[in-house]
Amino acid sequence: MRLSQMLFVTLRESPAEAEIPSHKLLLRAGYIRRVGSGVYVYLPLLWRVLQKISAIVREEMNATGATECLLPQIQPAELWQESGRWDTYTKAEGIMFALTDRQGRQLGLGPTHEEVITAVARDMIRSYRQLPLHLYQIQSKFRDEIRPRFGLMRGREFIMKDGYSFHADTNSLKATYQDMYQAYTNILSRCGLTFRAVEADSGAIGGAGSHEFMVLADAGEDEVLYTADGNYAANVEKAISRPTAAIPSTFTTYEERPTPGTDTIEKLATVANCDPSQIVKNVLYEASLDNGFTLLVLVSIRGDQAINEVKLQNALTNLAPEYGGKAVLSLTVPDANAQQRWAKQPLPLGYLSPGLADTWIKPPKPASTDDEGPVEIILPKFVRLVDQTAVDLKNFVTGADQPGVHGFGANWNVQYPLPKTVVDVRKAQSGDLAVHDPSQTLETARGIEIGHIFQLGTKYSQALGATYTSESGEEIPLVMGCYGIGVSRLAQAAVEQSYDKDGIIWPLAIAPYQAIVVIPNITDAKQVEVATQLYEQLNEAGIETLLDDRDERAGVKFKDADLIGIPFRIVTGRALAQGKVEVVKRATKESEEIAIETVVETLGAWCKG
Ligand code: ATP
Ligand code: MG
Image (tube, rainbow, N blue to C red):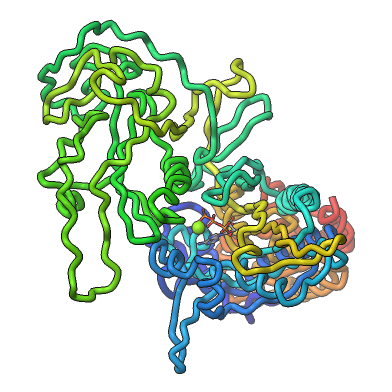
């Protein structure tokens, strides 16, 4: 490709919209253009990168026996209603773009394809003889992300490879899951990325296994906790650890004391002259369920520990059936404004006790007759949960339900009943001791989630009635797995891991071109002739090569070549007089002059090696 014929514009300055290096560089180097919030044009150079990544993904997927297909992006609401996800995806999380067609039918733009593929399986899979089966596709997904940001990292339209496998039993699922683990490892290694596979939260679906593939980078939105022995790595959302032992309390009898200005654990520990592990912290949440119920949840946890809201959401999902619900649509800490909906007066946040009386809650309003759609029903009782870390505490310090007052020397079942529901909602953090080996401590790193593999089980097959006939003639729900990898996010993550002050340094395997031939002066006939010849020969030899034949100053061309990050640059400059060209390696900036007739062979060897 000749640069003079390509839509290629580089920017000297970083556009204000970009915050992280990879986003700035992709914009500056003419790889992407923003057309709207979270919506980008993949310009010709990036499209080549995406195709290279897709080719690697295809090779590795096909090698496992999976087959490629293409599913529709327009999906009927009925399918999502069958799985029970329509409301969650269009209202609660609101991540699905939904629309109404001219016949008044509701449709969604595919954020993911479990429903569609399960409907296909329901229609087409009849017998155990057809199993296992694994279908995948590479396609644009649509998600109305709350916070689209960082360019391709979190777009509202982005490219994903998603695959879905169907099995007769869990053992077969586990075998495919293992193959996918290996395939994803191969894909990321081949793309030249430094990454870590970590245990991931599998959400409300339950105990089935799930791993995320994290590309390690400071700009990552996820936190990974791991041990140096290499035996444990998990997303912080999922991570477990051993809490340190609590320091025994020295308070012996219960009394309430004024503690003005101590609405945080830190301030309280200073004023009370105690260790945070001697405090019971009580945090109030509002959880809204799919059946319109709002639960007011009071979580008691040891003061030196933090609450992991993903674990809390999972715990509440398990409790939801007690309140007639199936899912927790949202979980928030109610501010003074939110409290007005249900509190008789503003709560003394920062000073709550585990025994906070239900009488703080207004009595429920009588059912109204005007039909304004679904009404929120606020349960007029606190749902009280206690984290394991707080259960064994004695003589602890905790709130007294009055601003500026705490109780000292409190005990469960003396001042307040111990909540019946004991949960593990504690957030593991770096410095904690590992569960598998207490001589190991957890360390922290930032990660960009590139892939997620998941043992789904029968959640979707049961909901949609996708069954197969077993050898003994029984109708059994299909066991499913799903596996996603963000192709466009991967492209940007590669840049986030590999750049310098001058621009991008593409890993060879996914670079848009392997080489660029730069003509410093296009009015010099000899330079043009040698460059054009090399350009043609290199391409013929299978080395994808760009020719910078633009009418620009040499300095501009060199800067651009560095910026766009092509691994090898060939310059037909001064050395031509000795029958040589200059060859520069982008990653190291090493440069050497080599004879014109050896260029193709040399680059061929470098590209192989
Ligand atoms: P995240 O937690 O980052 O939102 P997710 O859990 O929603 O990701 P999945 O539904 O598992 O992601 O999708 C599979 C892969 O698709 C992710 O691992 C990621 O690489 C990619 N991906 C997800 N959302 C986006 C997005 N908004 N923009 C770009 N890539 C995305
Ligand atoms: Mg997401």
